[in-house]
Image (cartoon, rainbow, N blue to C red):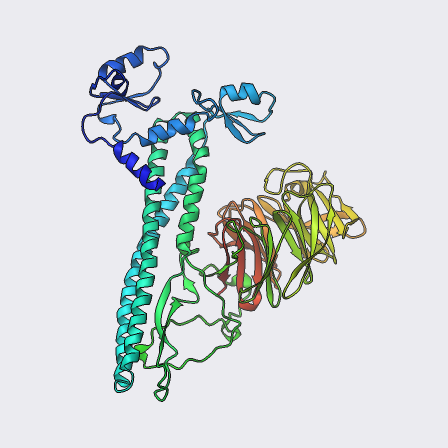
Length: 619
């Protein structure tokens, strides 16, 4: 209803004929408007335009005349409302208080924020390229999604005709016995087709709503870029950022909707008269060849561990199911991982559960022989899935997890908002909290090292910052501190340790730090309790852009896989030559953790926001 009202208001503001001067209407005079004030968002007649320029207060207002008079003033009124202080409606927002994270006017600044140190003037030029690019990307994805939904609708119709013909062929063979069964199947088919068509219609209506929102946001941004002040650009873009995030999540939800395929299955032998066939809705394909914009298009269940149950099939003309990719070991490539490609096939595994209230944020993932352990940041949970990705159990955590390590029996978790580490016992059917121990500083990452824990602490910045910090590194045996690891601050090779935001045990004597624009591997001296020397490092360069390095994983060949959260990609660094490296997955939406599943030749990736784990197969 709110969207319908907004649409009606927009239509009311469209020019349908001569427009009257708004100030004159207060005197019951209906003079034709000859101009429009951008600042006041009002239509003005010739006289009011002249008075506007004469008045000292309004002299500097921007006036549009003749063909520049806007037909729709909705963007202008929206800019004016978004630029106005909520507490002092007569004043425009002029500053941002970083201490309290609020936008304020000059009166708010004087009254409540005089002593705040982190106050910035919003009149400074800001870059809006990212916001514009987001809207362009959303619009492009919308057009692709709209075309996909149209193709799916036609596919349902074609499948309906195809299966209907298959049913007729089947009924012809059993004509003397099962005419009634054929009628029942056709009725069920019609119901399924109608049901799926209705789902597609609902999705298309959702697409239309998204299109309206994108159009309105584009109009707002275009008007803001053309006529808004520097301060208005800063304020309006900040206050409408949540709308663009909502649009992105709505679009991703529609992209992830399951596409069903109607097929005739479980066809019985001719001597069975009780039931001759069934209708089912099946996935188009177990593994989908998809492009960049389709990487979040659907959930595909993993059946590679299940037995191949044979089905009795009717004639080839009746079979409408799709072939499933075979990942049997006999078909795997014998090439090393450093020479194999990835990113061509993607499988999505849903990790959102019925009790989740937020969109998931997967900050850690670990694979065992039989289970998959996931840390959900936004829903504050540990979740345990089978290797078929059936939920086994979940456990509520005391805060938002930012990192987790797992030694095969126990999981250790640190949090964004708590100065403590929790230890959990993991079984095949349960997750149990064993103990927790407080810490003096904020732990931001941890890893199992030599049967103990290496914990990375922040002293000033938080886990999400990319700024350098005077980090502290400890080796702990439970709550007791076995050692505090130091490093030679005079050695240039240790300069980037202060950028570290994640730690990963590389082998029994060395660790890897994710350091924003690079990762570095250091030898840990067991006797000296120091980082002895840097073995190797990999940094952002040329076309291999790495920004906000996060999760790290290693395969059995010693290759390192690195998540670039802000660069939206996955890097691979060769174990034989660390100068030999590549971006193995060029497009991945804000990846923060990764695991190597060598049993099925794939990389499993968790992203900051999303309800799915993404699996990219090697070939």
